[in-house]
Structure formats: structure tokens, C-alpha cells
Image (cartoon, rainbow, N blue to C red; front, side, top):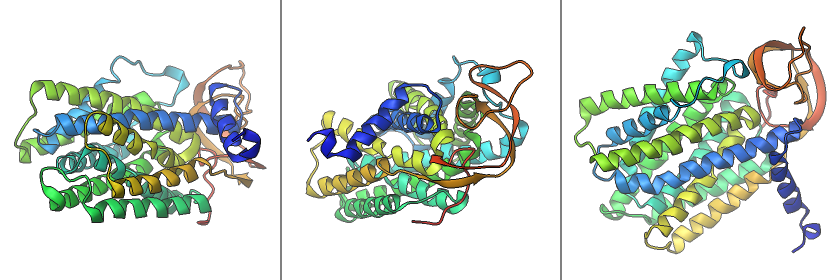
Length: 378
């Protein structure tokens, strides 16, 4: 089928291709946000079946500690971004502690426990619930728009999760009943990560290296404390090294990319694009020797795939008003929203406190730092 017969596909291909350019327009920023979110999803998705394989002999708290220690260690070779990014300040620490506890300790512990009772493929597909919960929480807490496509996608993902849960697919050694409890734990982990995603949204405009370093370090310390109080088994050294590597790639580099995507397209859309991760994980699990998917798993995968397509093809554009605003974050003067002047003109990315005057216009946009207006569902 030619592009002329499929204008929606053609538009989406052009939309993603523009991310490789750097003209600085609002549409380009959205496209770059999409690509960043998809790259983050690939890195996270690849690690899921690996974590299941090497974390089977470990306590969930020790697995969580190693994953987020790896995330923090992955930032050590990276210097702070200097004047190009806003720095983490003392006022951000309470939120960082909260997201570390929820997303860096509770969520990975639940996920590791659930992985021990399901297959890598089944658990990977259940991760789609993170996109559902993130979209709903972002709409409820930040008023981010949920168009008809996103609402339909949420319904499809919910149906896919119900299919996996009720059929007991992806059972591990615990049988169907154990898989059901494992599925509940994985879904609970996605809810915790979704809450982490929306709590992290105000931090997305800060230096992502610092945010990952703080979150990873604090999450690892919290998990270490829980392991000291309740833990039983620490993984063998080769498995511990693999978990640290998974944490560095799937929870460190991936989180940094996720934060960069959030600042461009908001929490709901980033979570939606991140829904690619479950399919990457399922494919890796299948390719590494797990039993091929059965009919209920294929049906759930088809529902999830259609939901991701609806997310990817959503287009958000309307007339909106920017209220006067003063804030600090990394920005450029060719992005369509930063036309202020400097005594000595600055070229390229930089960060400082700046003020926006009230402005009304219309263009394609995501719920980034400059588009926090509310929407009604639908």
C-alpha cells in the first residue's frame, strides 16, 4: 500500500523522521519526545526477561536494590550538565525521596516478586498497565488531555490485561494460581511506577543526570534497608553483576531518556509511548527460548498492539493561552516559546530563570512545561 493511500501512516512516518532534524519548532520537539520515549521503552523492555532469569534465586528487595544501584552507578561517568540544565535544589529533595520510595523501592520489589511467579513474556505484556495508570493519573492530577484515541487505547489495554489474568497465562513454577498472584504483583508494580511517573513530571525540567543519580541512590538505600529487615537471599555474584547492568541500562539510561521525553510531551503521552516496552520484553523472552505464545497471549498482545497504535497516531492541536509564567529549565531560543533577549546573546541550550508573557496561539503541542492547561476527558 502506497503512502498516498494511507495518509495517516505517511504523516506518522514524517512525524518520527523529523526527530532526526533540529530545527527547533514545537512539532519537532514533540517528535523528538516520541523518539526519546521509544528508546527508553526499548532499553527497559529488553531487561525484563533478563531480570526474571537472573533474579529467580534472589529476594525481591535485593533485586530492587541492585537495579537502582546500577541506575545510580550509570550516571557516575557523566558530569553535571552545567549551565545547560537547571540543577536539583534542596527544595526538590522531598519529592525525590517520595519517588525513590515508590518507584525505586516498592515498584521494583513487587515486580521482582511477580516475575518469579510468571514467565518473562506474560509479565512483559502486563507492563502495559503502566501506560493506562500513567495516562489516567496524569489526566486526574495535571489535567493532561485524554482524547478519544487515548481513551479507547486505555480500554483495549485493560481488556488485554484481563485476558492474561483470567486465563492464568504465563504461569511459572507456581502453576496457574501462582501466576495469578504474580500478575497481581506485576500490575501493582505498574501502578506504583505510574504514580512515580506523574510525581516525577515536575522534576523532568531539571538536569536528568542529577535526577537519575538521586533517585537511583535513594531507591537503592531504601531497598537495602528493606532487605536488611525482611530479606532472605542475595543472588550469586554473577547474577548480581547482571542485575547491576540491567539497572544501568533499563533503569538508569532509560530513565534519563524518559525524563527528557516527559519535558517535551508530558507524562501521559510519554507513558503511552513507553507501552512499546512490554512488546520488546515479550519478543526477547520468546527469542531466548521461552515457550511460544498461546492463543490468549496472542489475543492480549493484539489488543495491546492496537492500543499502542492508537496512542502513536493521536494528534493534539487546538487554540490555547499561555498564562504569564516565571520558571527555570534548559531551553533554546529557536523552539518557538523562548524569544527573550540577553545582554550577551546566547546560542544553543542554556538554563536560567526567565519569564513568559501571556500569549494565545494554535499549534501541535504536548503537555510540556509551557502547556499545562487542563482538558476535559475526550
